[in-house]
Structure formats: C-alpha cells, structure tokens
Image 1: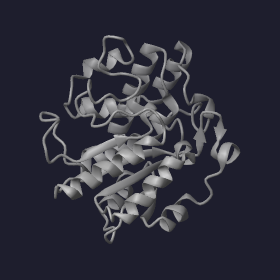
Image 2: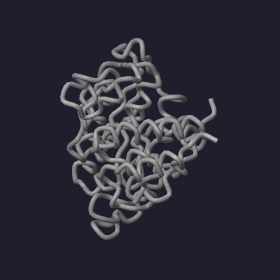
Image 3: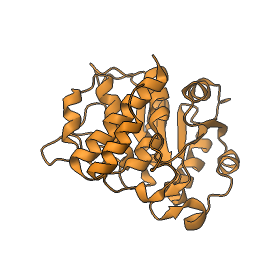
Image 4: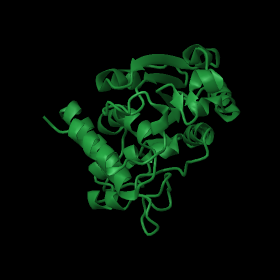
Length: 266
C-alpha cells in the first residue's frame, strides 16, 4: 500500500462527508488519520466481512467526534459501502456524529462523552483476561480529554491489573475546542505521567505510519502500553493546520474547494 496516497484519499473522504452534512469536526479527524491507518491496515485483527467475529481485536474511539476518520477507514476495509459516507449525520443514517455500536458495523463501543472511552477500554481488556481470550484492546484518546479524571482512574486500574493486552494511543495535536491545552489545562509531560502510572510508553511522529506500527508491535514488558502520537490538528490542509477554530465548524464552498485542491492526488 502507498501510505501517502491512501492518507490523502481518506482525508478527501473526511472533508467530503463533513461538507455534505455541514456539521462535524474536521480538525481532530484529520489529525488522527495515520494513527487509524496503522491500526487497521497493519496491526488489528478485524474482518470487514465478519464484524462481530469473537476473536477480533477491539477498538475504542474515545475521542468520538473524530468518527469521520474511523468511518472512512471502515468503509475502505469493507465494513459497509462507501456510498454510506455521503449520509454522515443524517437522521436515517447509521453513521451518526459519534460512533454507535448498535448502528455501525465495525464499531465496538458507543463513545462521545470524553474521558469515558479509556475506562471502557480497560473493562474490555479485563474481560479478555478473565475469559482467557487472546484479543487486544486499542483506545484512541484526545489530549483535551486527558484533563478528565476518568482517564487517570482507568490508567491506574490498567497498571494494577497488568493489562498487557491494552494500548492507549494519544492523538497529541495539542489543541482543543477552546484553545491550546497549555491555555485551557496544561497536561505537563504526558508521557512521564503515564510512565508514573505504570505504562510502557512510546513517543512517535503521529503522521509516520511505520513508526506508529513499530510502537504498536513493540513489547510492553507485561505492562499496558501508551503511545504518544505527536500530530497536527487539521493535518493536510494548510489553512486548517494548528488552528483550534477548526475543531468543530463546517467548511463553506470556497474553503472546501481550496482544501480539496490541496489534497489532490499528484
């Protein structure tokens, strides 16, 4: 697979569906594309033709507002037709504004309330251990939601129960809806914090799929794993990059046309 071309294709899908429905969250959807690609194309055991297979790996999109990126990949993997992407956020669509496991094939957990996905992922990993199942659990967190206490209670539990089948990945784009993390509520050194909570930690370029996959496949020495993925909010569109105002507003036609021109496959 040509990763760069696929990433560009997915970003075009994301912006097309967000423009069509005139709502949603472009910034954080664009920043996590390569993270999800590394998971779904190179690491996770999933099957688009059998979304509920018992031994599949589980994925929790804790930053649920970034679901356009997840939907684009699930469609590409054959979980549902790509035509469905045109119906994002429509009342009769199975593609809602946040993931819904009761509606969308390939979605394991409903998410939307930030901070809760980490705890759900810990529960899934504990269930796998209790049932002597071999599947792994992956959760993608947003940096803004790491200001929530639930995340740290989950982290403490994950280390206590030695959940080496659990991976937290952080889309570390350093921006949230109201501004920068530093301005709203500083996270300090997030990697050192997860290390202190008992995680095996990695730091990678969140737009380098090879680096992401290497970290995902690396040994965690019997500990839960934390991968800090350094990303750019609005990645791929110059006027969106590192601009918190693009957290959750739609594109007008002029902006959409300009963004799609930047994302033309050369």
